[in-house]
Length: 91
Image 1: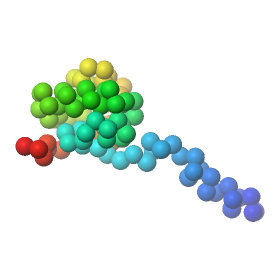
Image 2 (image 1 turned 120 degrees about the horizontal axis):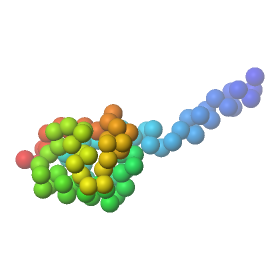
Image 3 (image 1 turned 180 degrees about the horizontal axis):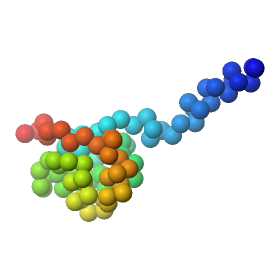
Image 4 (image 1 turned 30 degrees about the horizontal axis):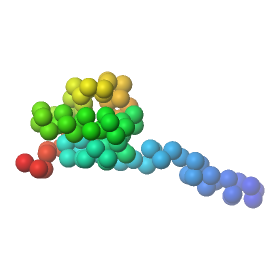
């Protein structure tokens, strides 16, 4: 029985860090935050998201992210539950 008491905390330690990521507003987040919070989005793609947003205005839906060069539908689906598209608070 002792081995089970020691093994129970193990899954918590082994959880991938991305599992702890929370939702991110793609209309207000900076490139570093987008890169940290979204799976398959590195800093380069995150910068492309910010540039697209600045040029074309705020995203209206998660699907709009696929309009950004380098962001495909698969990446959007992978992150759908973590993508928020609230209003751009800078305006």
